[in-house]
Amino acid sequence: MKFIQLTDFHLFSNQEKTMHGYCTYECLKIVIDAILQNVNLKADAVFITGDISEDRSIESYVLALSQVERLNLPIYLLAGNHDNKECMASVFNKSKLVFATNEFSYEDWIFIKVDTVQQGKDSGFLSIEQKNAIADRIAAVKSQKVGLFMHHHPIPVGIPLVDSSKLLNSESLLDLLVSRSEIKSVICGHAHTLFTRKYNKCTIDVCPATCFQWKSGAQTLLTDNKRGYKVLDFSYDYHSETFFV
Image (cartoon, rainbow, N blue to C red; front, side, top):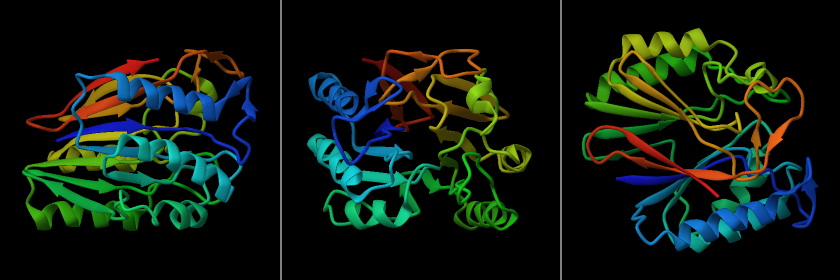
């Protein structure tokens, strides 16, 4: 199974509005155009890992869905720290392409969404209850391979600007990666950069944003004028490929 991963659209109700000098809606459209023009890309679904909206408006989610639906693939998604979960669900769940489920399977893989969002905060958090629920679920299904999807990155990516708002209690997730070696991949957004790191038997993989990237090492608002997406391949073991536009 192959997913196209998209993340961090940061759209507004006004499709012409900019963020740090970038028209985020136009950036998303450029990325979707690039995916459609990639004739060698054969994907089975799309997964959006949060921060779809910047202003949390209904209109921003309508604009996002109108672009992602152009791919004509099943859509899975979760919220980021900038999202309004209720507005997001009210728009996306009306689409026949959207699957509003917290867990799904493919052959010997099980994929689990992890909600790391703290109300009113940029940083992420994994509760003890959620950690235990993930461990119990993995033990119950006896799956050989597990993929976790979340918004916040659990380890530093080398950009202090966003590393200060990563998953705050990252040790809780890292403990889970050690105790449950079935977890082969942790798929994230949030950091606006390309980052991959091996931890135990798991690959921690961060997807570039569709709007812009933060400059490596940035402590202030320094950006790179590029946008991207990932292709996540679960056909055997886990493998990913990044495309910049």
